[in-house]
View 1 (cartoon, helix red, strand yellow):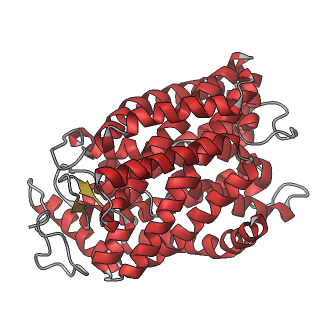
View 2: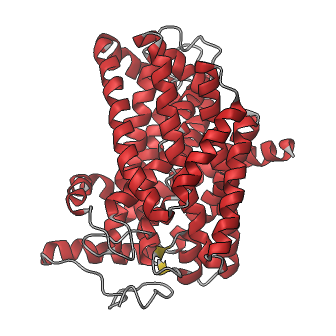
View 3: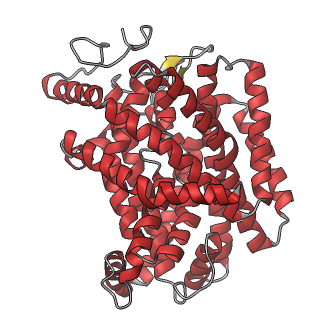
Length: 466
């Protein structure tokens, strides 16, 4: 089984996804006229009115924090360290590239998630790739396949990765047995996820800004005390990315592969995960493109800001590149080199908060698909919750390479399906985007009135977009 997973990962990540993800990012960057750069300030301006929620959906800000809760986790602390260990400093450059072009991809898939959303049995919004595959392309078999990957990925694998990293960090810092950590993790997660999507969104809206700002403040301090080394470090990243340093030409492929792999795992642009959070929102103004812009900001914050902060912490630390450490242990080592022994404790607390919020956000993504299978009942949710928590506990005691390999395979398969689907739905994405941008120019009041005269593919939920 392990050999099969490694074989499939080799095909997906060493060839298919590199071209597919870069290609779709470039495709939407061109077709949407580089909106990630042209409307960069507009992304931030939408946050001013993003705090409103209603009985049907969470606020745009809560949806952004929920998606960031899922994004910002092991990929930002452990994943960056793994990328540097396997691909060298140049992997960071390719993480930047996949994030910048991926912002357009993130916009496209989040717009679709919001456009094709439905109401569940409780009257709350639900949606995601399975919904826009079924409603937009009328391909129920493909929607079913994607939902299975979501259940496997977010119901079993991804939370196991987060729990695994938490347990390893606590064991490294405090010698706490992994099984003990697992019990505490699932108890904490159970308390929150049984409160539903709104509880998860509210907790994320508190924890994500707090932990993100705290981590960035320490990263800025480390950069400030090592200010003279920053230009040389940036040149090291660029030279390594293109094999320009001595004996580095053979490492370019490793830098590209690991940068894109870990970049996608961190920011999730194109993988089809974030549309689940985007679909749950009641945006202000009430237009599907609003969630596209808001969630596009999440890609920028995750990779360009937080992953870069981790990279600078590691690369500015003496001995980090020659160390045999990898994953979260390398990040802990680098932090202790800068600020002393308490840096290990800070990273341990940070990774626990980052990973814990990722676990509860992962639950939202998987739970979103229960409605598609007519399982969004109390009994269906109860059974799924038990399975989810059991898989999370298993992750704390599993071998790290096995868990990461399964995560890569699940994410890779989801990305392949989602990228093909959003390319097929390009006419709809362009039409809805143009409608929003035109309304911004012509009117102070922006709204979306269903199909109107727009060439929207498939069918929309009539009780949402009238």
